[in-house]
Amino acid sequence: MNKKALRADALLLLTALIWGSGFVAQRSGMKYVGPFTYNAIRFCLGSLSLLPIMFYRTRENLTRRTDGSRRTFVLSSLTAGTCLFFAVMLQQISLMFTTVGNAAFITGLYTVLTPIFGSFWGQKTGVWTWVGVFFTLIGLYFISVVGSLHAINVGDVFAFVSAFFCAVHLLLIDRLVLHNDPIRLSAGQFAVCGLLCFPFAFLVEPRINDFIANTMPAFLEKGAFAWLPITDIAAGLTGASAIDITNLLIPILYGGIASVGVAYTLQVIAQRDAPPAHAAVILCFEGCFGALCGVLILAEPVGRWTLLGFALMFTGMLLSQWEVIVKSRRKGVT
Image (cartoon, rainbow, N blue to C red):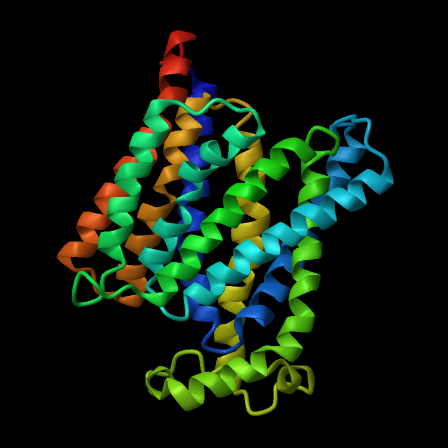
């Protein structure tokens, strides 16, 4: 393996680590603000963090020349940003009810779902993809059991639906990037996603807070998800102590700048030199890092069924990428 490929693989592994550990930040942030508020701030920060990169690329003439107009860019940003909004909001809500490990692995199903959805757009789906689907579905069943094999965690259902939107979003980006500069498109879609979250933060979050207080008091007793309504935050963080503000900034900055801005940039840089097979396999480790960080940082319990489910899902993700691996090896990539 040449030095460029080795460096690219290292950057991809770092990307997977940042994305996986980002689930911890997403869950921790909801101790202080609601899911819509958290994602609103997070994605607006992510969009702003890409502005220096856009300026540098424009100055150095690195921006991709496309046939896209300003109207194309706006429509592309609206389309991708809206799809991303549904994906990340379902994922964020899932973290209210399930563990970081479960959310990370189940969301990672998009690596399996993407080639299946792509078949409806004329892309070929081979037998190994379906074998991977079989393994991941069995694994999904095992990690979603709670105490018995017939109790399904509602948070896992939200994460599963989120994976569908993630797969559709990936296919949309694959098409839209043909007519837009990738960094510019990312900044646009992140901004759209963040702005869409704000009205829901004002209109929906107070009702979520009341619902949890009335029907799930155990969540509040554990100190989780007892967030302030965004109206209180906008009025000057009423009732929040200095330590609350500090603890809130850490997950928001990590989720916005690291998970969105830095990790995406690393992925773009790395995939210029990384063999496709390497990228496909390494990014599957996002779920593993998420589960590990959930155990080490949040002390989340992991039972035998969950471990079996993680192993089956990871195997399924790798099998779904087998044709990419074989194709790369035929081209002489080691």
